[in-house]
Length: 335
View 1 (cartoon, rainbow, N blue to C red):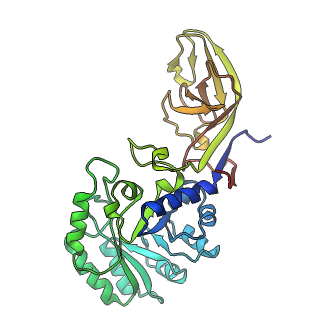
View 2 (tube, helix red, strand yellow):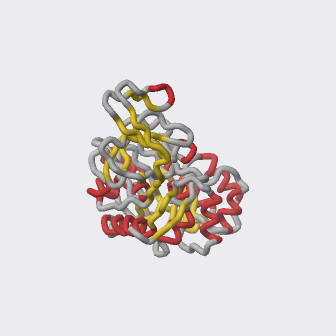
View 3 (cartoon, rainbow, N blue to C red):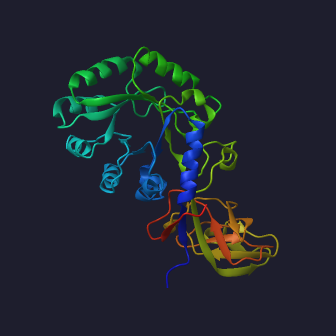
C-alpha cells in the first residue's frame, strides 16, 4: 500500500497567476521562470499550462531542451547562460537564448562561433553582486558582442537585490540607466517583486518567478492581496493520534512539551518528502480547514500537529519546490 501523501498542481491557478502578471505589466512581455523544475511543479507541466506564454526562463539546459522536444516554440532563456564551450552547439541547435554575465562566456562566444546566430541577454551587475558585467565594462562588452558576429538579437538585463524591501530599486535602476544610456536595445529588469511593487521597472520583458506559483515575495503583502492563487497543495493523512497529558513530550529530543491535555496527530509526511526539516514548532498547516500548528521536530517520514479541539482525519497544506520525487504528483484544472 502506498503512503497517503500526494502533491496536486492546479494548472488553472498557474494560468490565473500568469495573467495577473500580464495585467500588472500590460506593456511588457512576461517570461515564466521555470528553473528548478518549475519550482518543483514540473517544467513540462507548466509549459503545457501556458501555451500562450511570451517566453520561459530556466537555469538547466536539459529542461530547456526538453521543452523544445515537447514542441514549445516560445523563446526560452538560460538565466545563467552556458558553462562550457560544448553547450553552445546545443543552445544553437535548440534555438535557445543565453545570458552572458562574465568575461569567460563572452570570450567563449567570440572564439567558438556557434553555427547559428544566438539571442543573447547581456546581464548588468547593478548591485546584486552575484552575476553580471560590471557597470564600467558594459559598453565594451556590448561592442564585443556586436563585433563577434554571433548574435541575432541582444537584450540588456539586470536582477534587483531589494525589489521586495523598503530600499526598493531606485538606485539599481539609476546605475542601469547610466550604464546603458543611449543604447537602443530591449531591456528586462523586473522580477516578481518588481512587477508588483515597482511598475516603473517593467520595461520590455519581465520575469515572473515565485508569483507564477501563487506565492508572495513580500513580507507584508500576502499572495491573496496580490490576487494570486496557490498552485501546489501537498496533502496527507493522519496515521496515528496520541492523547498526551501535561509534562509529556513529542518527537526527537523531547523539545516540545505539553502543559495541558493535548491531542497530537501524526502525519505521514517528513523531510524525506521535501517538508522542511528545520521548520519550527508552530509552523501552520490546515486540518479539515482549520489552522493548526506543528509540534516538535520534523522527522524523516513523519511530523506531528496539535489537534486539540479539531475533529479531523486529513491534513492538507501548501509547499512549493521541495517536494521529493517519492511523493506522487497529479495535475488538475481545478483552481
